[in-house]
Image (cartoon, rainbow, N blue to C red):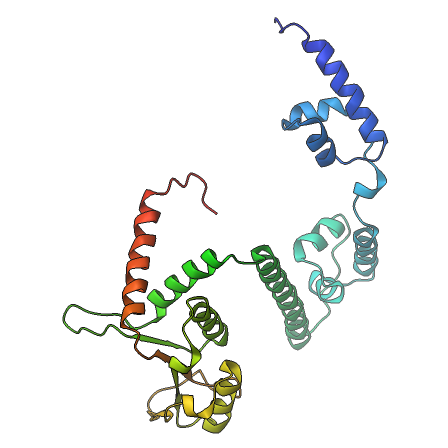
Length: 290
C-alpha cells in the first residue's frame, strides 16, 4: 500500500498534539474541534493508549444507583419495586442486577398493582420533565426577532387564523380570532409594527354561557390593555347538553375577536405578502430540513 508523501509525518505530528491535549484534560470532542479531525477512527487512533480525563467519566450518582439496586435485589426486591424506589428505568435495573438470583414472588396482586402504579407515576414525572426541558431549550433558541421576522410571522399568523376574502363573498377587512393569549399578544405586536393605531381596534369576547363570563371579559381587557369602550357586547354561545365539552374550568376564557376598522388596504397587503411568501418558499433551495 502506498501513502502520499508526508502522511506518516503528518500523523505523528497530529498524534503528538492529540496526546498533549488529552493529557491536558481535553475530551475527544474538544480534541476533534481543536485539530479539525472529524473521522472517529482516526481520532481514536490519535489518542490510543491515553486514558480519558476524570471529568469525562460517568458520574458517581449512576454508580451509587447501581450499588443500591444490587443491594435491594439481594434483599429480595423485584424489578418493579427497585424501579419504583430508585426512579430508574427497567432497562437500567435489568442491566445492573441480571446476574443476581431471582427472588421469590411474595406480593399480592393488590401490592403488585400499587407498585406498578407508583412506577408509572415516576415514569410520567420523567416524561413531563423531558417535555419541559425540550420546550425550554426550543424557546431559548429563538432569541430576539428582527422586524422582518416579526412581519413574516404576523402575515403567516393572520393567514392561518384570520378572516379571508372569498371570490363569492368580498370581505376585505381584518378579523382575527383566537383563544391563545400568546397568539393575541403576537398579533397585537404585529399590528404595532405596521403602525395600526389602537383606537382602530375593536374587541369582542366569545364564550360559552356556562363559563365565568365576567372573569373572561376582565382577563382579555387586562391582556390587551384596552379601554372598555373598545369592547363590543360579549357573544354568548348556547350550551348543547348533548355535547361533552372539554374546554372548561377556571382557565377557560373563550376566544377574543380583534377587528381593525378601515382595514381594507391592510387586508390587501396581507394577502399580497402571503402569496409572496408562498412564491419565495417554492423557489428556496432547502437541502437541509430541521
